[in-house]
Length: 290
Image 1: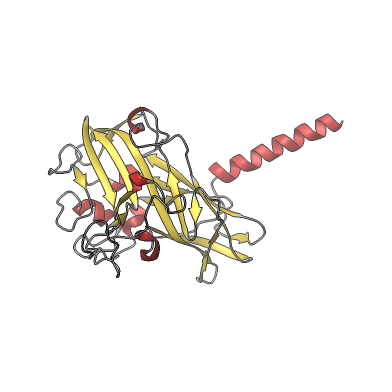
Image 2: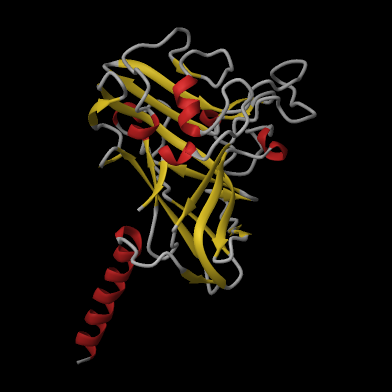
């Protein structure tokens, strides 16, 4: 009888975890506040999971065949939206690896296949923190790194702000998102980060915020942290981009206000390419609730 009880308890525990990770919610309201709050993310290309070594057909306006070579991004200023509309900060756990201060890294590449050159084995699909007890019905966050942390020295910065592949230099700071593809067997890069950062040279951090912040603001309604997860979908991000061609050099979008490869991407992210300011909530074209 004792063995049977333990088996039933184990099955129920596994079923509960699976439901939290993959279930669809019939309710958009969640009571939070006891223990850790886990915000789960999932990387996708259309209706398929994003993974290194996979070929995805029909991506972008030219219906290109695409293979991932990198897919990572930072989030910060994570808030849960209360039933009355108030935004309540999620206090991130300081785990010494994926989260430091108010910044967390999401990592959907595993260092295999085309991701081997700059990637790593570890994966991360969640943000963990605590919030005051209350009823929460939505989620908001920034895809980016705040100015006070954006121009650190990666050789001494705490993890996850110590990854050279996610950093330009002291002057321009971090790549908020590093998304790299082989599209029709040609390299296509998206490195999102701040531009217009005034400093004497690349080895000197700016004293004031960059002219073009290029931080993406995301607000998702009807999000229940106990039942839903956030989908980051590259197929919708690149839907209006012709991935079969690029204006060199380098290939793809490096966030510069004059970069012709950035226009449709910045529109999808809800950013002004000219100023880097937030224009709309169309970042939901990339991020959505499931």
